[in-house]
Amino acid sequence: MLIAPALLDALIEHALADAPNECCGVVAVEPGEPPVAAEVHRASNTAASPLRFEVDPRELLRIIDRIEDAGQELGAIYHSHTRTAPYPSQTDVNFAANWPGVEWIIVGLSDMREPDVRSYLIDAGEITDIPIETAVS
Image (spheres, rainbow, N blue to C red):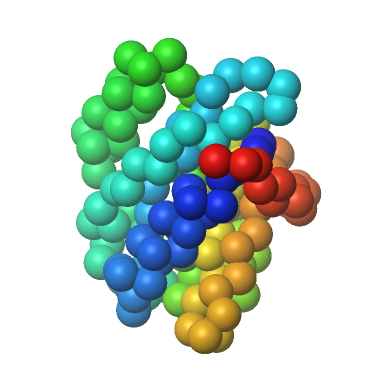
């Protein structure tokens, strides 16, 4: 997925705004090869926790409906790790089993001076690092 710097900044801003709790949301993409990030959709972390995130299924369904109504696709699920490196936890791996083919973007805030953003594909428990490619906005 290609992502404009402004959209990448929006992910970081969301993570910083919700700290010390994890943030969460999704990235809509314009279909194509490669897909291009079109919008960031913030979601509420109903767990309100610095250790995990949960999204109300009704909220997630509303966001996905808006994405599909705009002719876009779900490209990535994002969240933050406020105390650990931006690498998928076992909880992330378990959750990803329900979302094959969707990138997982994690904003690491363990060093608040320099957030670290990473992206992964998680398939059948196997984690693959995906480079974040920025696109001109």
